[in-house]
Image (cartoon, rainbow, N blue to C red; front, top):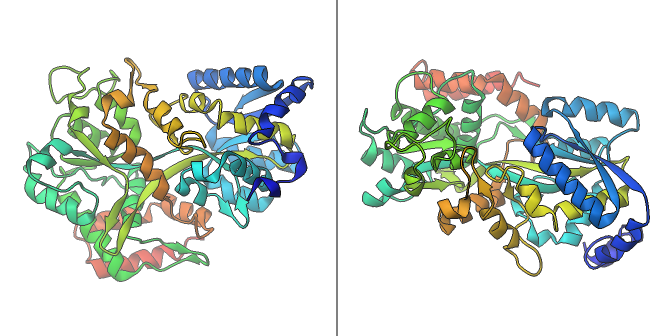
Length: 452
């Protein structure tokens, strides 16, 4: 969409934004902004940004915290009452359903993205919210799950980074030496959402999904068997027991694990910046030694999907159907442009920049984000803790971010499948030798096919 295609009353982008500032200052506009970032320190930062926006644009913003668990029901009720807020900061799961329901003004979101420049955004973040002719919402930030690994040991042994099933298995063969060093720490605790998240990542890596555009799709036996065999192998390279995020972090921090799968919220902890989760690889809990020895992989592949995938969680600004549209668009554009570094500063270790830069500097926001301080008990910029290569890998994963059901329009069904924990249970039973791979695939298809 070019600037010439944008409707006249929405010409609030590019150079027109500067013209709008003077006109807006003379009006007494107010908009409401719902945010799920309701922790006190994060709310304070959002209120600071709202105040800066009001000073610049003459439009006041009521920053209203909404619990993430309540967001769906509150939005539905407000829509029925014709009382939606102007802008909603929301999770990926609502983008397409809210677009279909009429809750979102998708034309407004599309115009904002066009004005800021679609080429300045992560392609993956845009594609997850794509609709016919535009976008449901404006991507704000996100993160991708990571394979975290001991790069120093990989380099010593001449191993390739764990970007594929094959490379992971090669590394396990060289590095697994229990109890001193486990090749992997796989999630095996069936009733933990962590196992669901890790398994979806591993299935996506091999191109396996339980849904298509029609609903449930039977799992392909060959590709799913590859997933099962890989997961069994990494489980066998793990300690015994019911394992989830806690053990994987503890063992990696102690220097007893070569690889784990984790979220980027581990990045500040790795560097000794959080007293409640210190590295124990040496006697100094504030040391950044482990961070210096760590590498990460976001795009991960299996034999049936050489291109691989990254498991991503993206957040969006939705402009509602009840909004003061022009004012809402100005707010979103400000938060994604002049105020974008402050938007990311709310929690930089988990808010990767989905808008990389602007027309003048295509890496402006990545560069600024890498220098934002992270940590709890101590602070340091990610750019001081990790190499530029690693920063690029962290941000680059958003270009290939995926989730089951999004592209197919079946996110609701995919979520029910995940939340049922059927996959967790049957994979664990396969790991424990209760049935062979073919029988496990058949049982998965039988049980998942009943979910609707």
